[in-house]
Length: 369
Ligand SMILES: NC(=O)c1ccc[n+]([C@@H]2O[C@H](COP(=O)([O-])OP(=O)(O)OC[C@H]3O[C@@H](n4cnc5c(N)ncnc54)[C@H](O)[C@@H]3O)[C@@H](O)[C@H]2O)c1
Ligand SMILES: C[C@@H](O)[C@H](N)C(=O)O
Image 1: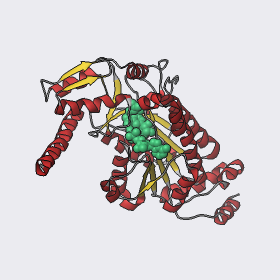
Image 2: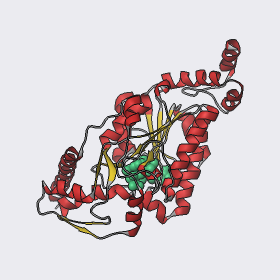
Image 3: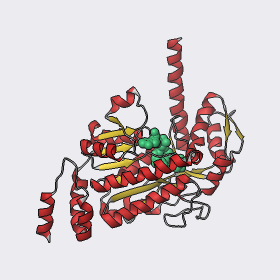
Image 4: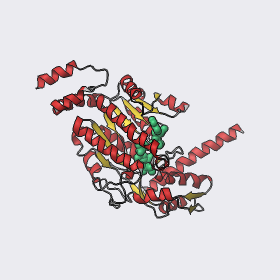
């Protein structure tokens, strides 16, 4: 059997970074261990990475970390948005619509990709406002991504979210395994992605990996339209107008994480040898807070800061269905997830970072005027 595996491996067509093509599926029917050998070879040597949805809140930051580690050219950012000059200076970028399988295929082949990091999505609040588009991007798009990754033997990362849980799930804490009956199209698509990924892993040997992220907090104003984005906007408005109108009740608790902790753990998880993973989808956690608690942190810097609570039924309904506190014991045990930022450090970072950006903007404006 070993010799046959070797012969078949040598006979396969390939190009840099590629493991196997559709033949993989046939292999799996005959010999799962053979498929594992072939895939393993690619995973160990390859560090050519494609990020979809790369111009969103998380993609560019992850790209910077991956490029620092594996080289600027190793990471190809893709999206359907027009990149800024800075993005183009930082490394390769290509327009790619995840609904176009052939275009994705061309990029995977030309880049010689080994890892595919799939960030394209419509976030929770935006998804509810355009369900047909959310179905297309978050579900149909995912099918393309799964098939590409499987056809070309890529390691695939698809983030999931606290939004993959619903009102029937335990809220405090929410463990990795429990009832998942989300009520948003965003959540339904994420549960679908988790299950499809696990299925492709079991059925075809795809190296599928997923982390359920909490709300990710960074000093960025270009956000995707998530229910947790209020926390970012609160810092910005505190520094600019001193007042923020919050669409959630002051006691609405949700799990949150600083973007650097999210990036560090994503990279760590992607680099973990397959045999250490006891599951394919893990919760990761750092802190949980309410609008009231985060505004109290901001008031330590700006005592006169004021928040008006004006319930937005869409946002409130989504937030009320999500976990209060996330449990992540398995991620910490199996591959060493940890977090550096608690609410105090997070507030310090956000105040410093937004302040620097605003100071730069105003000195730039002074130079122009
Ligand atoms: N930001 C968070 O708080 C958070 C929390 C949990 C999970 N996640 C997940 O992480 C991933 C990235 O999140 P983000 O905050 O960076 O999102 P984002 O909304 O900032 O970025 C998503 C990107 O997807 C792109 N996109 C949309 N349609 C596309 C298409 N047809 N083809 C290609 N690209 C398309 C958008 O242009 C955008 O740049 C998403 O899957 C999201 O569900 C994010
Ligand atoms: C939590 C997460 O998935 C995203 N920030 C949203 O609110 O939609």
